[in-house]
Image (cartoon, rainbow, N blue to C red; front, side, top):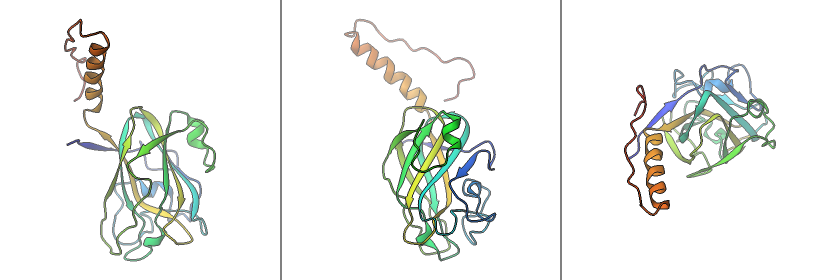
Length: 208
């Protein structure tokens, strides 16, 4: 069974986390990526919420500071105490990029520089109707390291505004190591097995 590690932007601020719109200073996008924020209780200061009346076509961008292969998404959809679950983001497209200009462009329909990634589902589940944590995960088919990642949220669960309580990205432990041995095996097959692959040890300091 694969193991995953949460990865975060270098800081939870407007430099590294952006969205198309924001409801108010109580709902900045980077509140929704900060693991120090509570997942229960009030949503003020702990969640991202789009501007009033914005329940469609919102981008949410994360800059990880360096390129990483994201293989899973962790999220807790929007809720305020026991209410507001219909304000949670619903339909999504997930994208990766290594272009700073793409990260800075928050127009929903502008996909320049972005690569759309295949996900195990293209919706965020609605949060349970209780003031409790409700962790959910989505697997991502991705073999490329990107610095910038984007969520394109098409709609909400029915309210006139949309948001998320928490959204985080995850790498897959030892994934690069697995790719290395797959490369050796495929190369061996392509050369009619006329040579024997040898274990090439990584440089000192490589982490498994």
